[in-house]
Image (cartoon, rainbow, N blue to C red; front, top):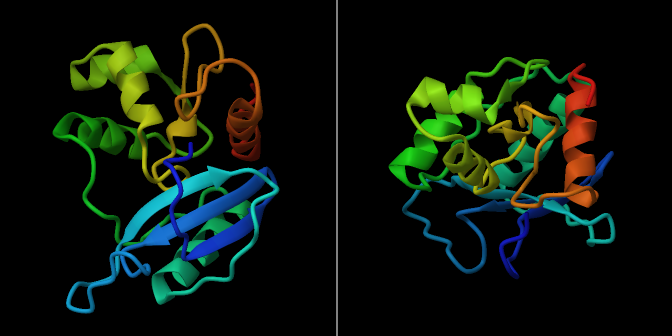
Length: 171
């Protein structure tokens, strides 16, 4: 789920590749008067260069991701930037309510918030904070479904399978 060429305040190694962490205190958008917030977490290819955390929030986020990778029921408590539409935020909140080790279908989530499955899928794919907002827990009624706006098998669906297996769900 790459959103163009951006600078990451950390790139960490994870079992399924790399994760980029971007905060508001990056080189291009630093404002010392504003508290640091997480702007984005991105799945990157395993060939992406590692980068040690450059800010306190990048360090804290990296530590919490590592804790999740050791113990998937771990919670995240880093401050997130307010992004997305009101609808996306509703979807993302409903995703956050899905317990670890559990999945919901796009249709189940859509019924819960009064929407359509395709719209829920689009909001899942637009998630700026995967892992923290666990969109991998949303699946198709006929299988695993897409991931990060990528359908079909491949790198991103392999990440989704890995995360679900890590949480005790077989797909």
